[in-house]
Image (cartoon, rainbow, N blue to C red; front, side):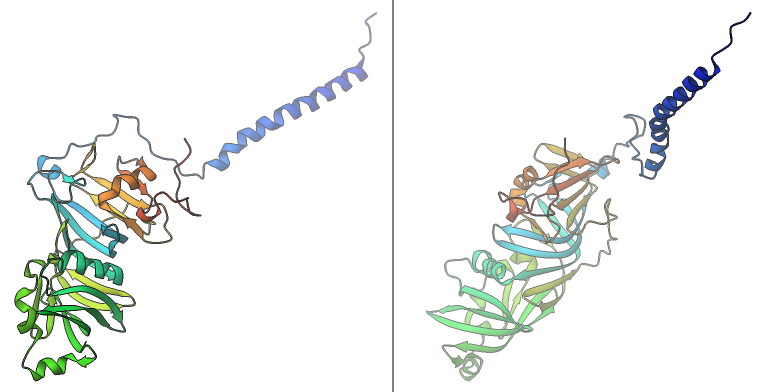
Length: 355
């Protein structure tokens, strides 16, 4: 006679086994469903090396000018003299035909500004005038201090004509055929009305000091007006530009440039950046790096204020920052502001990604 099967025992074992299997398989099911949620993250297109062509630039393209576009950049002339570049579009060209644009030698290239809004504040105006424009031992003007006063420019200093004569001058500013025209509305000489005094003796600033002005730096006189050519006043790198407007904006002498090249805006690889320098086309040289068909976007680590950049110390800023290659083989560079080098990181500063 066949032995009866223990159905009750089998049922209990089967139920326990089913529960255990369910518990074991539940995480696996969750893991299967997990990646479905992650598919919303955009995937990077990283082609295997050698599978996408990278055309070699022709000789003409390799030697072409480098297109440039700046926004919110405090560009240092020296350690404490700054051009406040609110926006600028132009090209940079090596003086030697066919040579790369060499960042390590600012004497070797020319910055041609198509259009831009560039300001200067009082300390930088003082430095520009005293260190570069009126720096000759026999200069007719010295110890200049320039400030803004409402919509006028106020200049204090010394006129040297046989003796030193302290003066203060208030002047309207305007653009005149590519130059800045300073038209005095008031001159105080030792508390005396200088304009009235000059008129009384049949004298003008042009007659008084016109011949001794530094014409090589773009300074000349027209009666009592002073004319200044911004393209000749700045130290290297050399610039080519055409001034179309000038005005006082707050504490800045704002200069508007338009050379009429009508260059289109460059399309940024990262349109959301606020403070940047973008270099496109031609060949760049930075230290041991030679970049053909240049495509380099340079931003500051601290986006809360303008990008403080000093070309003489660009490598120090590079060392304090980081860079990464883009999918199109361009270069994305993050620099610390020049005036932040050697200081602790600020809240919100960009930091290198973890290794």
